[in-house]
Image (cartoon, rainbow, N blue to C red; front, top):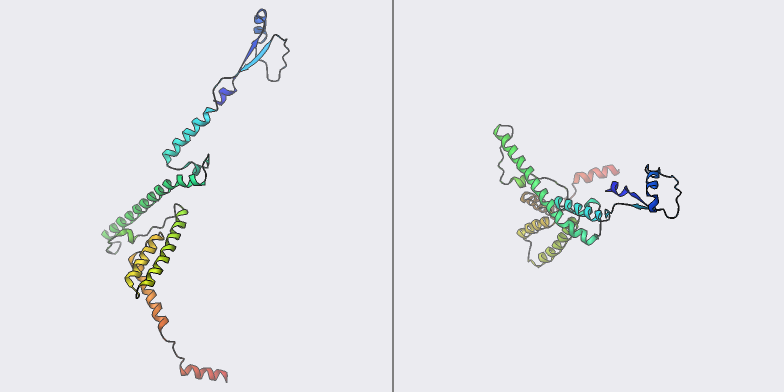
Length: 235
């Protein structure tokens, strides 16, 4: 199309009695920058092909739209802002981020499944110790990057509101409830985006109980031997 836009023809209008003469005179095209001296009845007109090149922009925009529809990515991810603002960009990338999050979750499941079957084969040939695995999705932990940073902000806000609600709920209970503590930990980790396993939850609770018992113990009195040694040092 660009080549065709550069193509043109000269239409020279001359009196009828000079047509043959001018055809012979201009039979060889002149070089660029040449000087042509003509009389008044001779009219020159350059004619270009009417390709309507402005319509090509809309055609290419339609092609890029089809590419985006096939890839599933919004156009501003390619750096083409077009007429999109912040609100429309966030609305357009929402379905894409959810799709990528589902794909990432399924890919993590594939890795865990491969690890599980590799371990089972290692047990069969005697290269690994046989350990009973009830749910290998909790046994193998795959760390993957966040698809969207906006999710972290919403998760942090949700977990903060949940902790505030749990504090008010715990104040209404007549005493401390271990079952309620486990439920609060499980929901907090779920709303924070990092689900907690039962073993990790029990470890946190046991460590908290040990720290509480140590704080409640009376201070150990200093021994007499230590006092006598201190007096001898002072002397």
